[in-house]
Image 1 (spheres, rainbow over the protein chains, first blue to last red):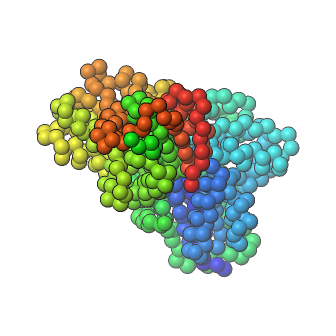
Image 2: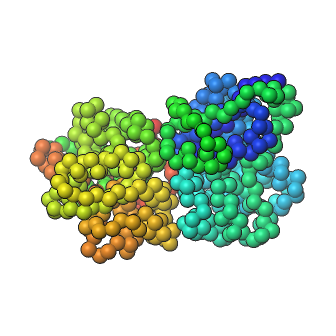
Image 3: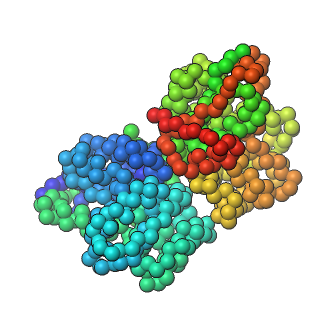
Length: 261
Length: 261
């Protein structure tokens, strides 16, 4: 039994799509979420900047006595996870590996990946998929406008539809599409309309949630049942839009946001 | 005579629209431009974050021996200019005051302002205009997606048109529209199509350039004629798109970008 919180961080609201899935599987846990809104977006930044930012956020979460850390950000996972696992002595889970295991188990052979510029440029998804699965075909597309559009709340309007169309129009003959940035599940309904019906849309948050649960159950690290538990949200910059999107996503009316440096 | 460079900074490529106008009026000067791409976009950040970032960039420019500094960014001008002028002992020019003087001289009485969320929220434009001009009516609109779209190069496509339409559709009965973010002149042709013909589009870079010229001429700070002169560009994060947009905007093929911390 371990009543310390689970730590989750992202550059903005996107990681909340992951937090939501983890909370579904582990409703009895304490959570600390950091949205690094002062540095949003991570997607267009260089590897060294992402490593520096990720280090700061993980140091914040370790000081707050978390038991496991989830990098709920495609860019930070692809650019910094390996480095962070070398530096820190705490279990750290990113969004790529759990999804690659899912692809392998389902024997998917033609997959599309959409993500931020930084993630696509780093080949984080491509390399890990190709290392784990033989003869898989991958089509990648950087979609740098989608995360800012999600932060603006434009996830279902005509502009979202056109942008999604623009980004997906050349993606042919895939069986599944990985939403390689944690903001993208916010566009799920529009993406569904754009794609042929048989194409599976992969929300990485669901895969991460399963892996987090397995890890803390196997290692006897779950919170005691019937203990009080809560979710604390910290932002590096107190933005207005965050709280509205967060309330809708997490379906909680009384979210309190705190500032962290 | 003063051969030290003129310093210009912005969060990204936007400030190049200002640099371009200054170079037109003062082609014989040396220039140092800093694009704070590691922290882009400024527009959605809090006042305290903007002050901190502006301070760092001005410290960089002072170390590089600049003679005058232009904050070529609407957000940083509205949120941090006053504070910076208190801290630093070097002439610092922002994009708001020169434009307000222009409005006053032209006796414009109904004006629209589009800018980033941070700029609009700070009322930087509104307060300065109302303090200087009696009975002027101002309509403001935050357009948080435009700067990221400009960084992506989407300034003339259908998505740009729809976003511009969405942002401008409720702006009625204006005589002039201030492009209150230095990225926005990149959308000038689309904005022109969206607006009635008689509405003047105000590119703040032109107003700033005039004021910089006046200041350095009056204070005998111009570079010696026929001296060698150049433009150095520094980025806090080496992004790919920057160089393409910069080459087009400045019409220079051999731009060299350097990294700065």
